[in-house]
Length: 396
Image (cartoon, one colour):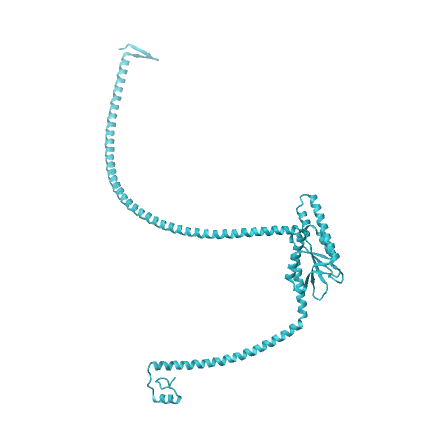
């Protein structure tokens, strides 16, 4: 037993030691197995208890789940009944709203139909107006073409200017204050002569219409063409100014100035905008260039001067007429006073007549009621007054 089995480091291990060590190891192993088995038994017992507890909990939960399911079933059934009721209410509400919507839609469609019909009627009326406007535009375009042809001819253009001059003068002045185609002592004839009050010398007006030169100036496409057209227009206007100054400014026979009438506002504006030196030249030559609006203004001034002169000439007659008017007013006042007196007397007579009518009406009412019993005193008074005997008539 003392035999050395092996050497471990500095120690020698004998067989007895090895057997004892093996036995101790086996005992320790057996002890560990027993401990492990005990623990496993305790664990299995604990697990069994835990499973039993969980089974009880599961059973309780199943019972609760069954009760909840029953409650849920009842709630679902009640909700189904409520839902069915609500669905019925919703169906009725939807039906009512659909009926109301259908009625409103029908009314809306009817109103829309009426509105559409009215709009179509108005549209037809407007189309008729458009047709009329188109016809008017056609007539206007024809008139414009006629005017264009008229203005293209120099003689017709001159007649057009004279016509506008005559229309403006004739509309603004009395017949004895102007003369057309007035002939001077020299035999030259002016388009119009305006006679100022208190002055035997007429104010002469001549119509000029330099349309061709102005059109060439407006339609010039290059600076060279514009320069040539400007020179032509300046030359034509200068010639007209010189002709008017030489022919119609006669000392002692005519006024000191003459009017050159341009029957177009646009032509007049063109001259004033681009040919200021020509306008100044006309002023120096005592020739005033006027447009239709300026000629109207001048005619109104002449009309005011003529009216003032006539007022001064007729001042005595106006004073006499005013005196006669005052006398007529005084007589009218006197006659109105007399008429007022007559009306007052007539009012009094009417009041007395109304009083008598009231009395007759009251007596007629008594007769209708057969009130014939009259006291002796009243009868005596009625016999003295010549009235019929009534019961209540004496006091009245």
